[in-house]
Length: 189
Figure 1 (spheres, rainbow, N blue to C red):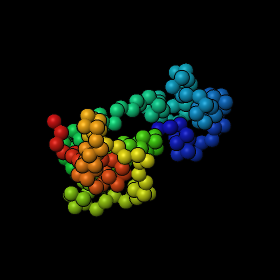
Figure 2: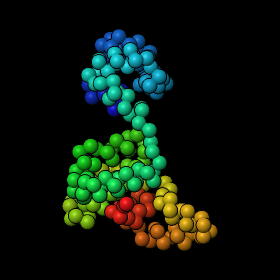
Figure 3: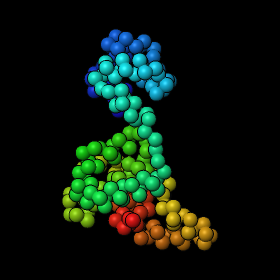
Figure 4: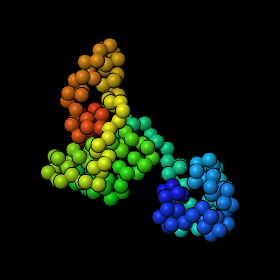
């Protein structure tokens, strides 16, 4: 969780956090405004901030240290997790962990919309009402259409847009709502 979010939750100002932690106001101000990277701060600074905020150092740094993987790998991991957990269990996991919101707040929009598309698709095929928590997000979509890598490669090899058109025609509608072309989420090896 970002330091600003924790401060907002605890209703702490930068000045109050500075007093509680013993970290200079200017350091806190620079971290909160992203002028300074908290991961470049000393261990002592991170420790003091974490203590004052009532979180672990890991929690304070987690969002900054998590690296974004390739989108194809992300999709593969999601599909394997779906196969492992089952539809309803995975839906619950996505919702309870607010994975969609976490990706969205990080501005990792393809990942957020992929999970939202999956959630909507699983709701439809399992006759479960759609979770309304993400209705505002449902009004948005990616600026550019994302095709699976295999489809893009086929289009390049054939020097034709036909594979792209065909994939789009066969795409799962819930993903296509967000400009993601996905034809299969269950048939993973």
